Image (cartoon, rainbow, N blue to C red; front, side, top):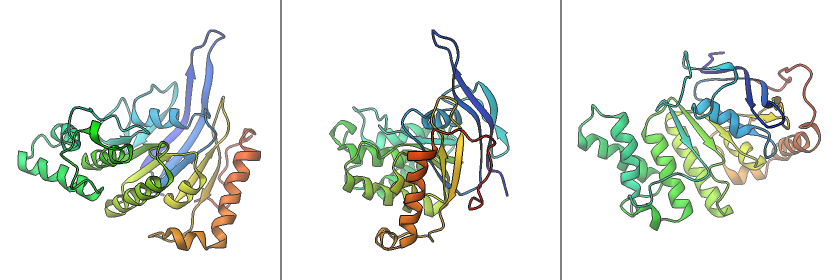
Length: 271
């Protein structure tokens, strides 16, 4: 398979008063171009640490990450990151927040072209009417829409999402999952999303990567999600296979996540 993102023997160790603590150990994963991966596991297992290393926001203790043939060293616009809280400048409008990134990435484009890129993505995420409101005036859900628009507007090679809907109410969360899927299906960005929500993982992802509990967290299992795209939430909830898949993931989290695999192997149902 074409290795678009290749994570090899990734380790992350933090110094502590009692000596070094290895949070992530021997984490191996390969993503295909255009694939959507959900990374699940218990709180504190190192999911966000792995994502931060891919984003270039945390140093790698050992191992390597290669994206589109180049080793990752530090942060860069080739990776669009969406956090749980979208990190907007509150005194700027949603439009101006997106333009901050667009102006840096598309510096050779005309002012009009740059404005059109920002307006296009803000409209796609449902902020057509609200893009000129200050971020401080927007609801949490609308701010997250602006964060998603900003990530896509920069045309990154890869999208990294760290529990982007974790602070939203259920209705807003479902709306934004659909916004994200719609955008992702338009240009098939390679995406890695950290979540603790099993239903979210099954609705969005091509594969669900399950992490063992920390410390020394690693890949415990990989589940291939075979529901056809585009996905319909209602049809999914009426499919018995959905509940079998859900049960499989929950069983891993409840029973198997605290057992470190002796030898990381791809299960029979994984890609």
